[in-house]
Amino acid sequence: MEGREPFLQGRPDLSVDLGGIRLANPVVVAAGTFGYGQEYEELLDLSRIGGIVVKGTTRHPRPGNPAPRIVETPCGMLNSIGLQNPGIDVFIEEHLPRLLDRGATVIANIAGDSVREYAEMAQMIEKHPGVAGIELNISCPNVSHGGMHFGSDPALTREVVRAVREVTTLPVIAKLSPNVGDIVSIAVAAQDAGADALSMINTLLGMAVDVDARKPALGNVFGGLSGPAIKPIALRMVYQVRREVDLPILGGGGIMSTRDALEFLMVGAGAVSIGTGTFVNPTLPLEVVKGLEDYLRAHGHCRISEIVGAALV
Image (tube, rainbow, N blue to C red; front, side):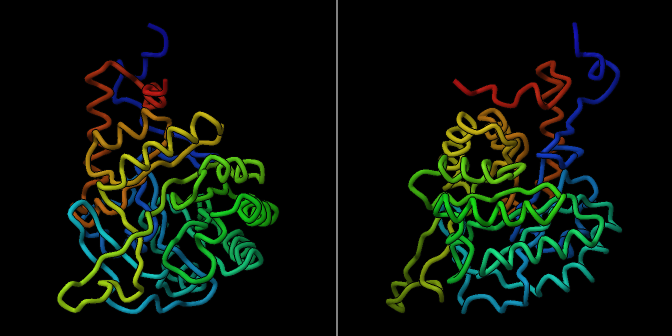
């Protein structure tokens, strides 16, 4: 049986190539849900996660949006954090060395107010070895400047991806927003501009109301909905993009179990990202890694790539 030797000799091969980023397994933690890993490193071995996409980082520190910034919903969570972060200098000087010391595969998530700012941050990261790739946040719905603005128009998407592509040799991942009419056109624009991979999806714009106070529950009025409620939408979008675009896809949205991760892989994602699920179960990423390995063994597969796209029709 050709190609089965690695399985017969030992564990299934979970390694994947995400647009030039070699991951030991396809399970990545999503930006904005894992911080810089500090809160989790006493709970799980960061080196065993396929990759860590760090918190969305901007050129200068940001205080974020006014409180309240989190609302729990029946099937997920609304957040309007607003990219609160210490700025790229602190990421490079403090958080990156610590993550690398823990053996983590680090993907930097950057968000800019302008195309020039995205390129400037990519150049700064390029000078510091250790980052495996750059995820462009062109999809955050919780900021008044930048974010989703760049990911809602194919021309702007093309402009920011191309600007970053021109200044870095690192793999570039464009993180797409579901808050658009035609996500395929945005994905095509990112591919045309030189992106190496796509990350999808970010949160869906929503809101909640405090009926006792008779006002919006979030200080920013609107927030991004994540969690199990958005999984069917995320699966549909990954499926649609997979059929039209050749780039590797980091797929996620409401992954709470191994079966959820399998669904994303089977509609064409080459790797998966876990976000809200880590708030419920901090060890979920490693449980999913183990679950994928068990699934491959149970079904006689020796490589994770054998099931990618299995549900495409």
